[in-house]
Image 1 (cartoon, rainbow, N blue to C red):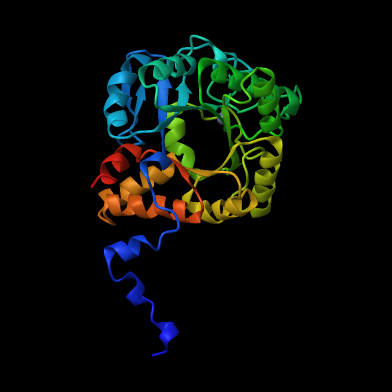
Image 2 (cartoon, rainbow, N blue to C red):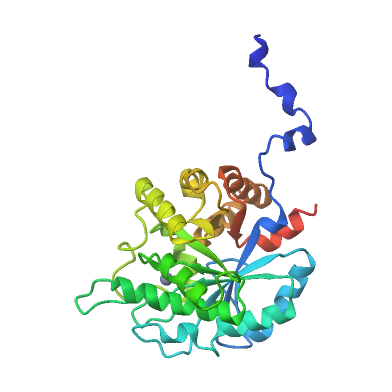
Length: 328
Ligand SMILES: [Zn+2]
């Protein structure tokens, strides 16, 4: 055999296998998505998202304290308003008494070391369930959409969010948010993480159950990216870098590892994040329950593929389990 044919000598030991990784998964790379409702005492399991709940503000301490003790470093908050008056422009999104702003304030107080990100979108708060605002003729009204989303982001920054993460996919919103943060005095206080390449995916179903954010009419294909659109994804990433994003995110993760790799190359000086979305999580859990593979092995394989592709930040519902698994 040729000398160059022999590779196995380099990874015959568990330790030498670990050296083959260019990046290694750590607890600080994990961000835990949390659903917060406007029922203050709620702890309601989400059937399509096994092990995950909708939480009321009053339950956050007992829920998160054990996780913070195990090394939870960051969370991202999603508002699930069940009782608010929704309207065309998503007025309840920045209600100072709404669940997201109340939770940001509370978590900053309870867990001073915890990094708090807030998802920014309008769809949970609009009567039509879409992520932007519409003109009379039914088209998206670009500038007012970006402006409204920027207002909401600034409100979350004012409440104390370390990071605002717009998931709406409206054109121009990164620039509008960055401008609003700077003009509002939060330019150096708040990170802007863009859902840059967010695809119109079949994998969001359990999330929509959890957040009650299915659109009342139509779909989101006019603003979320077509799954085949590699070029558009690359343009969106480059645009968001220019518009002032501090972190670039790809969503979903597993079917879009090539896009993550592109993001790492196009935004080489930015941290790259990905969202292992609700349907990906549910799929991994369902496969394990069906006996296809071991849950832990598969969870590691999926998340480590995202790390390998270029991510240093992963939003995943497996975060609580990884906090245990990474200690073993
Ligand atoms: Zn939305």
